[in-house]
Amino acid sequence: MSRINKIGVPRLIIICFFMLLWILAAVKNLQVSILISNSLVRIGMNLIMVLAMVPAIRCGIGLNFALPIGIICGLLGSTCAIEFHETLNMSSGQAFLFAIIIAVPLAILLGWLYGKMLNKIKGSEMLVSTYVGFSIVSLFCIAWIVLPFKSGLMRWPIGQGLRTVVSLEGTFDKVLDSIWDFNIGAIHVPTGLLLFCAIICLIYWIFSHTRTGIALKTVGDNPKFAQSSGLNVDRYRILGTILSTVLGAIGMIAYAQSFGYLQLYAAPLMMAFPAVAAVLIGGASANKVNISYVILGTILFQGLLTIALPVASSFFEAGNISEVIRMIVQNGIILYALAQGGKLYE
Image (cartoon, rainbow, N blue to C red; front, side, top):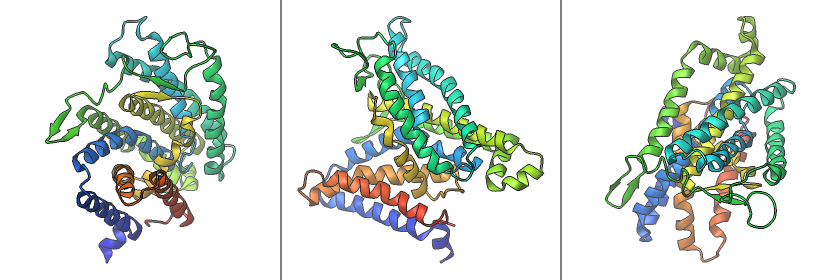
């Protein structure tokens, strides 16, 4: 019973349901090897954006529903890489690094401004973050039309502004996925993508064990104690917000290179919700999180989405049933976890 309590009954149910879906996939003669390959890619695509929730929760601002701020920075870095790819004669790897070099300073600046704002509205961070995330996406629906990009790869052939979907073919499409990739039978393993995620997780894990990382967690756990110990609570909250925004920007670039396209305008609007759902399904709450929760949550959530949709489609003929199930799984996890008042797994 103690082990069950440690794992958490809701998470145990999800794990059992996850295993059941794989059994059903085999029974229904679905191509399990392809589903495993897709799961590995989706895990790598999304893990860094889920990791972005860790510094936000640890510094005390809670689940970062304003992740679109970092995502927009990642999109800006990526569009700049496409713009200057031919001019600077960059290779795919150089274009990927160029996108990160552009995105990270922008994320630091916007994260700092956002952190300053959150310090003014303590206690309502998660509510305000949702509005801020939606607002910046709406703002950039205008920006993508007026920004002075000239590349024919991005602009509409007629009219003004960038296309809704921009291909990364010829720039840094699959640049991480193709590094040291290999096959185990019919299962494709995107080694470079998974290693990149592992390196980012390791860097954050090392940071979390430094004096600054420990102080950041202390501020989130007990702000009054931290303040009495001489820590500047507002400064560490801003630091956590910046780190979350930067990870969101890097995560977006890693996501885009694997997906093969940039989706602009309203596409980033709901991208924070899968990241929130994943970290909650892994065992986190609004005030408690570890990197292990991020890894487990991403595996479970992205694996569920990958396997649940084809299994559901094999049982139901309705064309949109898979999308309905995706929304139920994603939003149901968020609602249930938040309804527990942050004590889902405690």
